[in-house]
Image (cartoon, rainbow over all chains, first blue to last red; front, top):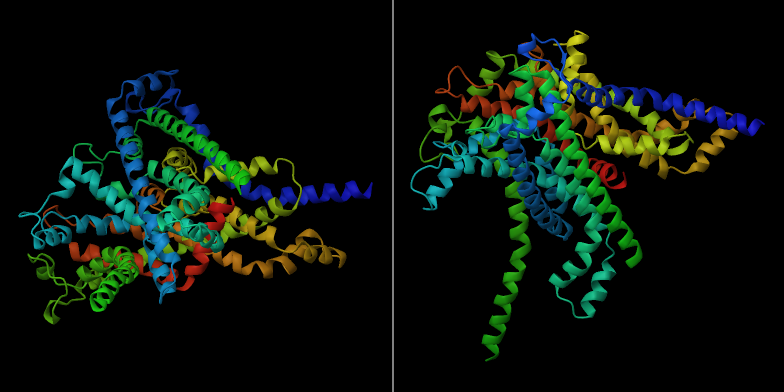
Length: 302
Length: 289
């Protein structure tokens, strides 16, 4: 009797502690997403004098034929995949370096975190300046090395603009990847490597056969976070290119933003949010599935 | 014969010895290069900034503080810094205030639907803000919160709650349970025990999550760009990004560089002091969640 009483009170206290946080999360996450689903069934733009008029699935039919949107999906996918691969490679390299013991390691580890901590919008300004076609330091270095004769218009050329924003993104976020991977490296017991070396394995073989498999959970988690953030990239592109030149770096987020803010097309913007949300959920679910599989197989093997 | 052999050995050896220092140097150069270049630009005169070939280290007469003076004398830069700091600090406090109790309940108390809540919290950490901004924009308009700090404080509290809950929960799970049991024997209720016994022990973890929350709030861009349009209420990243100058032919490179230095210095200081805590928080939030 009194046991169930205590349990009831504990339950009540639990709910009292959880509810405020839950309400804020529902307000800022659940409401906007639910609202987007609802609003996507309406036309609400300058044509309807910003009144919401029910229009069924017409917004989704419009997305189907919207070349600019699919172009932004392609751009976002290229940006995300290339940046992610580079971040994993560099992040792994940096983590391996920071895992070694050398004098001043603490300081170098601190320095390696700095890019992650800085505001993306502000570092986008810094990179715009580095890539400046007339006074930029990158062109200056390339010219001093004799690799080019005249300055390259990095942000003015469609392909090079994509390269530039990827470089800036890789710079900004590799440190996040390397922090996670370094934590993973530190949890691998050293004797595994020693035993492996006694068996005659080269460092490369040890990396392939011990480090990579044991690091798989961290690699997947870092990829998951980075994928989601890259797929919604906004600040960096907005500041560096604004989506240009000629839509070459137009990302999904910029397309949604201008649909809503510049063209005041709320219903269509909501449908774009829904489609982007569904794509994201699908990829996340797939990664979770992979993660579960890796965790299971690691549990069996070790 | 022996001589050549030994010299071969030392030369082969010395190459390997170089790999680590060179890679350490590369890591440092990669991490600091863009920031250093921005700093150098910010203290150069306009003539030195647009000199071709580039001036890397300005001579004494090429040095100036004019770009910084410009920011404070002709623009409300102190105000931007205050706005960023105020919004980030308030949302950090709110986030800890709401997040820590929730994390405790999710770690220790048996609530129905706990697993569902945790999964939900984990998934929303992956949502990019662009998915939220349309719905929030409508809310801000409906509640007439445009150009009000609350339009930033509430979303910033929310976007940091998932990480706070995950990090704090993993911390509470590591706390010895005997402690709370003996507090209960001593007659504390759950809330009293939380405030008097658990909270003081929790301070380090609160600092860890607080720093992350502060950084994320200070750096946020899209909400700050959308919900705040009045000049004197803008946050630093937005204000810096909008330093376009009067015409495209006259981009104030030096002023922009000075603004980026001001926007990054507080964060560099935070990292220098709290490197360990930042790493702890990030790995606890991402890996253990």
